Image (cartoon, rainbow, N blue to C red; front, side, top):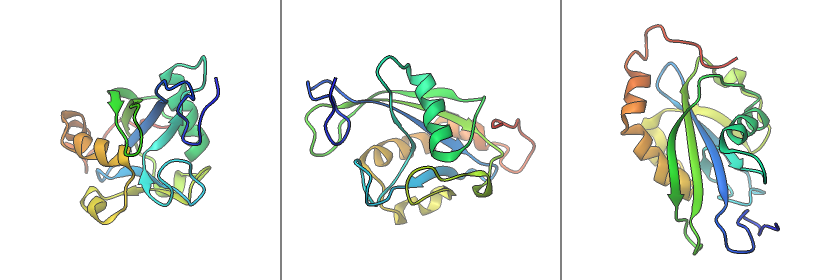
Length: 164
């Protein structure tokens, strides 16, 4: 199956995308600043993740994308979102799965494999960043979710290490 420049199938079927939101000990979220070469949301901030390859399931894709883009491996990812997102300029919505976890990883642990930089960002600063369509849709919902509340309930206490 061939794909257009943003990864949607040329036959009109939705793109399948797997993304990760990692939350550090401060409650900050891992985001990628995309560079000018990105086919989606160039020069904007977004989630770590990418396309699910043909024959690949979402869970395998999210682990692959996380490792490729950050060098991190995460054993504790759980599915938080599974749905469609309509992006501007597109008639077909994309199918997203977003997997989340708490982590002890820091910016120093991240090896940037794609984009301009990948860092943990204070949620209070998100309004100052230019975020892409999917991140603009997903991040406020995640930050208001019981999942994020549970991950940050003990933001300054002990917690299980979710990365290897």
